[in-house]
Length: 310
Image 1 (tube, rainbow, N blue to C red):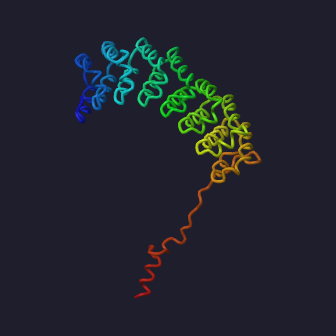
Image 2: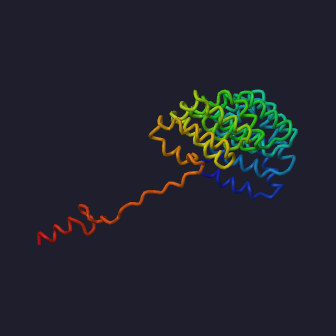
Image 3: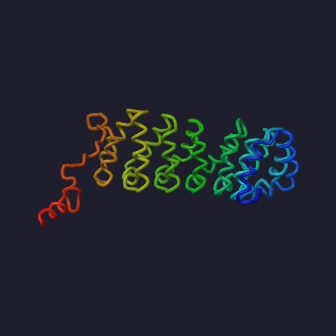
């Protein structure tokens, strides 16, 4: 299972084992499950083993190995082990999942900002519901501004935003005061744009109003990242809130002179002065009438010169 090539064969075999043989394999490997999960090649076969486990006995054995406090943390933060932990989270029952949620909640920032742990946190959000999911969400919302700026934490926020509008609205309210600054940050700009797409109408209006403030809009429009947030707002508003789209278009138009190099990008997403959407931009047509007449071209000057020399 730890061989660079044989582990793929083992994965195929594990998936096709009869239930009784599969259960026997889990029992036989119990002392080595953790070591295999952290192995570069063994973790592939372990993912198959966990994913194909169906009986309560098998899952209890696997949970007993990986859900112990030290084992869970170590595997979750490991570059190979976290893949196996994600499969474990998908398989365990609610009582076992509660222990996972409690461990993640205690160090939410640590897991969310880990290059590997953030995947486990997202898997737990997906697998949980009710009070358990709320516990995970609340911990993220509490540290939303910090996580949005983090190169891994921002993905956890985006994952939550994808779940439903109410969760998006909660995150918007946590980030609203810093939304202009976050829109200009390499990591958090993705969160701001995702929130503009997913949040509810009233909350989106609050976001756009913050962006349209006289002290904020010029900064956003001239920023290499912030300008995309403004453009995203214009695109979303054009289909969800015509009244706010007109206000945004009129306000943005006042500052177009500051960004001559991006002006056409903004104009394509704004209402015209008479309140209509601009026609779609046409790609310029290339003139092929002179094709082949250049130097060395097919039927071109080089061939004619050769005929003249004859």
